[in-house]
Each structure stands twice: as C-alpha cells, then as structure tokens.
Length: 113
Length: 108
Image 1 (cartoon, chains in turn cyan, green):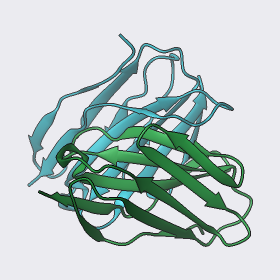
Image 2 (cartoon, one colour):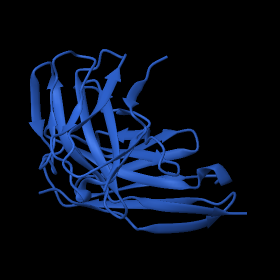
Image 3 (cartoon, each protein chain N blue to C red):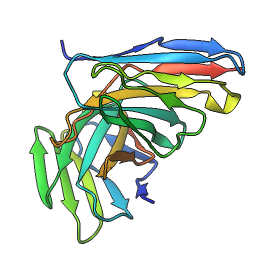
Image 4 (cartoon, chains in turn blue, red):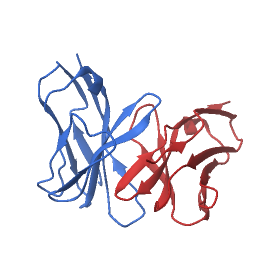
C-alpha cells in the first residue's frame, strides 16, 4: 500500500528538549516536505527536499532542521523546541514534475510545554 | 510572496451544489490544486488544474482562470461526508503554498 508514515502521532515535550519526528514514504517519490498546520493559517511549508541531499527552506523554517540522506526518509528535527512550535505537523511526498498530487502522512500533534 | 484567499466557511444542504472560490496574488506558478481534510486528518488530493478551464472528477470539478487569478472547486450532489475543510494550493517554484482553508458544513 502506498503510504507516508510519520512517527510519533502525538508528542508532549518540554521546552529545549531536542526531538525528531520521522517521515518515511514507500512510493519512490523525489519530493518530500514538511508542513505545520495552525488554526486559521492553513498548511505552511517548513522545509522541502527535491531529492537526496537536496533540501531548502519553505515559508516558516525558523527553529527547524531537516535531512535527506535516503530517498524514502525525511526527518524533521527541532533542536530546541519552544511553545510556539506547538502545532499539527504533516509530512508529504510527491513526484516532481507530475501533477503535484501530494500524499500526506497522518500527522504529528506536538505540544511543547 | 504568494497569498491565496478562500472563504473561511461555507454552509450548504445535502444534495445541493456548492462552489468554493480561491483567489491568488502570485505569478509564474505551475498550477492550482485542491485538497480535502476531515477533522485534522491527513489532507487528501482532489484535483489539479495546470491549464485554464474545467477539470471534472466525479462529483467534484475544479476551474482555473489565470487571467483572473481565480479558481474554484465545485461540489455537486452534496453528501454529509463532504463536510470537511478544503484547501487550494499553488505550486510555485519548488514550493507548494496553501490557502487558509474553507470549512464546508453540509446540513441535512
């Protein structure tokens, strides 16, 4: 089954404690990205990756890091989480140059206290 | 930057037709997409318009007019399960930029 898998689904952490949210896709997609969703703001892109070792900033990259060492994996790293990073996070993947049908993971609800 | 505007909320009755508009202030984008999201679940792809005109997929249709910087999603024969949030998105450069979303409430 074609899917994007994120882990964990829910996470409560404390300010400053480094965390990683994993994302994996099994569709051999080149393009992967991370979004955060906050009420009234829709989905805002944090980082994206066009392929292995190619990453770039989206619209809200501050406080986040990513890496793309393998095609299937695209982890999101919060080195020092703060309460304003409390949000619902989605990972997505798609083929580059096709009709941009993005496949989303089930989301990670992060609370930073 | 890029910005997309959608109505925040739309209400319609079961069986009716509803149109959700999306206007944008950007240029040079590749296409307009629509996504559906139920209650904080994963957004799912509905349609994509690369060219001006109407694209039809079952009960859903999407329209794009680049000259008017405008698009819409048309949902026909509304069902209760269509109650969800709907997002338009533009593929701009290597980014996918979303509107804030429209909550559709379908009443019986």
